[in-house]
Amino acid sequence: MNIWALDKDQSIRHLLLMLTTQLGAGAFVVDEQTECDRNAVFIHHAEDPALRAYLYTVGQQEGRYGIHLEYPPTSAAAVLFEANENQSLEAVVESLAVHFDIPVIAPLPSR
Image 1 (cartoon, rainbow, N blue to C red):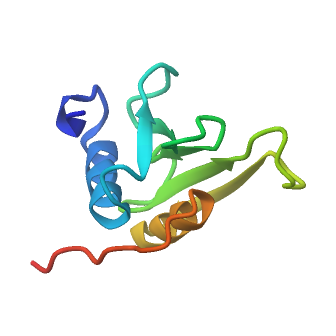
Image 2 (image 1 turned 180 degrees about the vertical axis):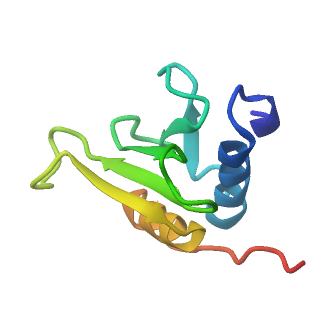
Image 3 (image 1 turned 60 degrees about the vertical axis):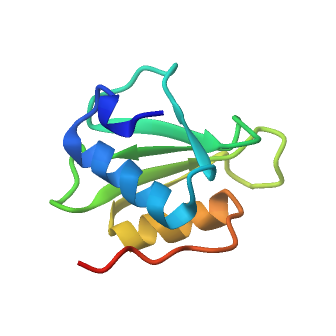
């Protein structure tokens, strides 16, 4: 999938590129079926579509992200989703690594 071809705001496309770089190309799948704002996107676990995350920039500070972690209804989680606002890229990466059970986070390339 070409992230730059998505009909999303540049901030969301940039976030998806950073997540792909740090979590790996096959770590998650962009949900192109669920409609949402251009400043938001659903992604899900590569093997379990019910394990999802909603990422957005609407109402967030510049360079910060909102993230809702969604759990399958059959999971042992006490709640079916967890919401966090104004998260840094690093916090989003760490949350998704835990949520999607990704053992290794690659560093971002140096400038």
